[in-house]
Image (cartoon, rainbow, N blue to C red; front, side, top):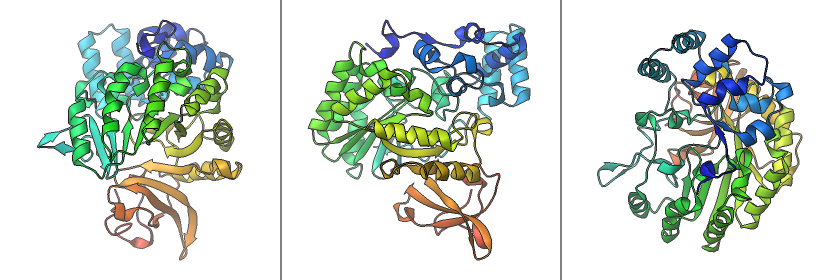
Length: 433
């Protein structure tokens, strides 16, 4: 039985939004605007988030409220007015869906080559539920795991959750996945992702994980999840919580590393005692917890938030891993932080933490060429520049090579940057745009 169907788990979806918003002082028009946003971008939360993580006396400024509830600025004002008008006028469902689809297609639903450059081919067949961007790593999207215990408003995977099959990345073809990995021994690491694979029951997750243990060249397995933050009972009192931890133990006993890629966005998510108990149980299984999340305007865009987040996760035995830049999709215009300011936040937070927490890397853009890290702002040959390097790349020859972009105070993404010193490209093989 999955967490999403556990008797203790109560989900809230768009039909519940108006009632939840009556907890705060909003006008009818304000509530309608938020419903309009939720008809285009996905909304889902649960009773744990609502009752344990959100400080309703601080709404709408509360960071977890902003993290999980729609904000009117997430869409351009004309689109909000259009959708609000359709909802207020009780427009036919098909008309609402057509309008929502049109808006979604303007929001760059699959950035960085996810549906073209990243999809692998095996024996002439495109494996649309896998992503193979870097030589040594394959991402697997189990069909049953393409939802979450709650949705983050900033999430770059929002197309997975809006009910449009053409936008969804998913597979249940475990045999084809195994065949592809066997045929590609350069793949040493598999990331099981979503959505959130830990909405699945352990029995279903096991069907995807066990075949990986029969492929000798796969040496590490990662599970991308927000469940430690949004449903920590998955590891403590869910009916199959013990079974899940036994599966983790089996992976570790096979001689592989198992890494739980935990998404924490704000230190508020770490404060309930059940989260700490869940993290302890995961670590006791032999799995490693690596923590990552994006820098998001209005939620965690301060050095105070990140320093506390990194120090707390380190104290709890987890490893700070990445601070990401908000991707160029969906509501990036609302949540994105300029790269110059983002690096200042990262640098100030990094300076406050101990060496154990300085495993974190950032700010990092998961862009078309790879993971581009902003190392800083400098003056070189009389020109103010961004210093950058690729932590990971489609072309391994580009990894770790420093390069420079002309300083742009308003740039929020890699495609906003231009090579410094009047050059036509950043590096041989690394073009702008």
